[in-house]
Structures are given as structure tokens and as C-alpha cells.
Image (cartoon, rainbow, N blue to C red; front, top):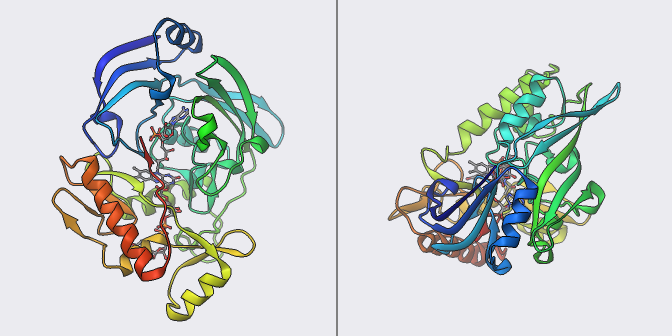
Length: 337
Ligand code: FAD
Ligand code: EPU
């Protein structure tokens, strides 16, 4: 199946709910059809974008030339041993529906990543993470299509250069790579991960929950903290938690002992950006149709009808004030297209 639309509205393809249009919108679940289309249309590769569900993008330009939206959703077990299963899933599958299926079948590894919006194909892009887990922990390999050559190849986990909200797929040299399928290695005898304190606190001391219970607790926590994009336009955390040297962090902690810090890599510390932004007085701030979510200062929201510039101006003011107050430069997590 391939569906090609001209001048296609993208309001429902970005969770900020911004108005934008794709001159050419290509929706497909067949790679060969996609190759044929790319060869027959005169597509400018520099103005070609891949969009999943748009839950991590800010559509800055009102007009995008070509958008490819993968809708291949097949998934299932392709290999099984006594301890593990190798599962393959198409890029277009809804991430949380896929996680729900893994949990229902008793396959452990993705339960802490429950209820993250988006598609399976986008999960490796920023190495989605939450509640003490990252997708790289269970990802085996990725099947990629290079849209500039129409070649399809596999990238194994060790070649993905995964980091905190980072991977090889974000590097500018790979901007023509479309993730087509993702392979996950999951445990048949799940190891429960309660390393994230707020998740651990959901269970009585000494209690060992199963993956179904972990999934439910994660969903509960997420619903209590984060706005539902269907009700309030947002793209989750707008900024990444900044990573600073351990030395810098301890100087800041002398002044602010309550500042949340997390171990990152040797010699570096991650700081809770939500806390930094809240300390600068932004939490609950609203101006016109944009604002900072009152329950989570890392989330910028569109109260309805906002423009990309309004959101970017607000983001710019937040970056400036955090820099001035703490000397830390926040970086955006959301991809600006
Ligand atoms: P899109 O937003 O459509 O795309 C994101 C980027 O990936 C774009 O650069 C796009 O070009 C590229 N892309 C998408 N699909 C493909 C593909 N198949 N091949 C190549 N490139 C592709 N993220 C977390 O990590 N942890 C969280 O806890 C979390 N919570 C969130 C909560 C809320 C309420 C919201 C709205 C977002 C949250 N996010 C979180 C961000 C978002 O859910 C993830 O980044 C998700 O993976 C985005 O999926 P998507 O399909 O919407 O990608
Ligand atoms: N905090 C504040 N004020 C706020 C928000 C947070 O003081 O307004 C403090 C909290 O009290 C806590 C710390 O900051 O001490 C961390 O807060 P939280 O546990 O809510 O997590 P986070 O660091 O703000 C990150 C991810 C989320 C992910 C959660 C849960 C990033 C950029 N964000 O948020 O991911 O769901 O942890 O693991 O790493 C996303 O990427 O879009 C996203 C939502």
C-alpha cells in the first residue's frame, strides 16, 4: 500500500498541534513501493522528512516539501530460546501497543517504557528512555532504508552509538536514513528494574512486582505528571537534562543541596532540568497560547492555536534565564523541523 497526498495538513501529525502542510505526503507499508515512488518523483532530498506520530517534533516551517510516514505495523516473534525471544516490529506500529503486547506475553524488558507516545520506528532515534530504562537495553538491531540510495541494510546495536537521548540516527550524515523495522531481544524470565526511586515507591518495601504491575505503575505515574497531547498540545520534555562535570555539579550543590542530580558517566552528572526551570520561576507560566506545564516544568504546552515562533520564543527565554541563574545551557530534546 502506498498513499500519496498533495498539500496534506499536518496538524494531526504533530502532538503540539501546530498548523503545517506537507506538499507531498507519502504513507506506505511497503519498501519496494517506496523505492518506486522515490525514483519516479523528483524529490529534493534536502527537503525530505520522516514523521512518525510527531510527538517529539516542533514544526517550525509552515510548509514541508516531502514527508514520509511509515505505516508498516507487522510484528511478532522470529526466534525463541529457553530464556529469550527475538521480536521484530515495523516502524509504523504504535509504541505503547507494541509494549502492551510484549508485557501481555510475559516478555520482559520494555515495561518501564510503557505509555511513551510515538511509533516503534522513532524509538531508536533518541534512544527513548524513562523510569530507569532506555530502549537500547533491549534493542538488538535496526533495519534501515537509505532514502538517498534506496538501499536497505541492518545496523546492529553496537553500531548505533546510543547515549542519553542520542544515537547515530540523529547525526546529520545519516539524515536520509529511514528506520523501517526494529528488532528487540526480550527476556522470558523478566528481571524487574525498580532503580528509579519514584517507581520503586509505588510498591510496598520487599514486594517483587511482575512486569504487568510495573507497566501499570509506570502508566499511573506518567498520567499524574505529564499532559495528554490529545487534551493539551505538547511534545514531552522540551529540553534534555543537562550533563555537567562532577566538579561543576558539586559547586552548584553547595549552594542548592536539594538540586536533583543523577549519575551519568564517570566524571559527569546529569541535573534535573525541570528543577532548574522551576527555580527560575517558569513553572505554570503562561503567555498568550503557550506556557510551561504547571505539573512538570520541562514540558512546554500549546493551549490552542499557538505558533511555532511563540513556542520557540518561550523556549529561548527559558534557556536564557537558566543560563543566567545557573550558568548551564539547556539543549532542546524536541527536534525542530
Ligand atoms: P516523531 O516525533 O514523528 O519524530 C521524532 C524524530 O524522529 C524526528 O526527527 C523524525 O524525523 C524522526 N523519525 C521518526 N520516525 C522515524 C523513522 N521511522 N525513521 C527515521 N526517522 C524517524 N520520550 C522519551 O524518550 N521518554 C519519555 O518518557 C517521553 N515521554 C513523552 C511524553 C509525552 C506526553 C510526549 C508528547 C512525548 C514524550 N516523549 C518521550 C517523546 C516522544 O514520545 C518520543 O521521542 C517518541 O519516540 C517519538 O515518536 P514519534 O513517532 O512521535 O516520532
Ligand atoms: N522536578 C522539579 N520540577 C519540575 C519537574 C521536575 O523540581 O517541574 C524535579 C523532580 O522533583 C525530580 C527531578 O526533577 O527530583 C526529575 O523529575 P522527573 O522524575 O519528573 O523526571 P525528569 O528528569 O523531569 C525525565 C525524562 C522524561 C521521563 C522521566 C521519567 C528527560 C529530558 N526527561 O524527566 O522523558 O519520562 O524522566 O523517567 O530526560 C521526554 O523525554 O519527553 C520525557 C518525558
